[in-house]
Image (cartoon, rainbow, N blue to C red; front, side):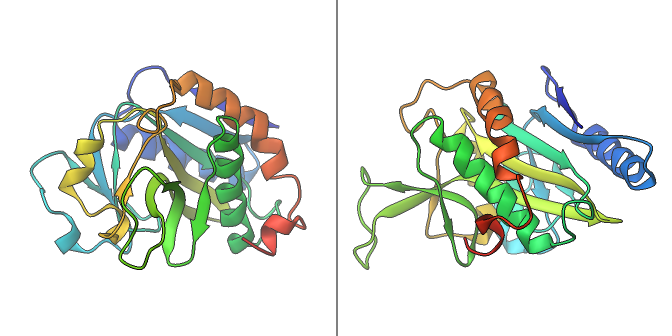
Length: 225
């Protein structure tokens, strides 16, 4: 069984990290169930293991937290649904690449609940949406904006950290970093796309699609993006 926790008030980042590390250790020992934690953070930036200091363009804007999750700089703040996944990857097949693809698929399935099509792009971490309302790229392709970030860490085959989905954050807050080191694309949110979606709506979509996204390590999700 997976325990679902929802926090109504923004959770300080250090508090969340301490909880995840303790819970991951307990899961690895067999002393606790797997856990999905749905929350918000106060405005802050996090630096993953691949973060480049040049991508922190406004270091005094919000607190900056160094973290050992994968990825580069990202923003967390009110209006963004953060989804921390403390799951036993050993029990789920011991395939990290498959697990990340399942996380990607989970976000895409949840977005489909709002008639939003998410995409995975080689060389660009996260989930992206096409923007036909914006000018095309120099090569003639549709513009794309990032709507969700993914960054995890494993300890004893138990995952922590996870996903952030932009529901209605202040998108100007992303201006203090180069999100995930990518300069040629922007960021968006469900509300920015014109959808009157709440965090609670997203929570329902995530719970509804979880079992499908993680149905089996042998699913097509693990063999193709």
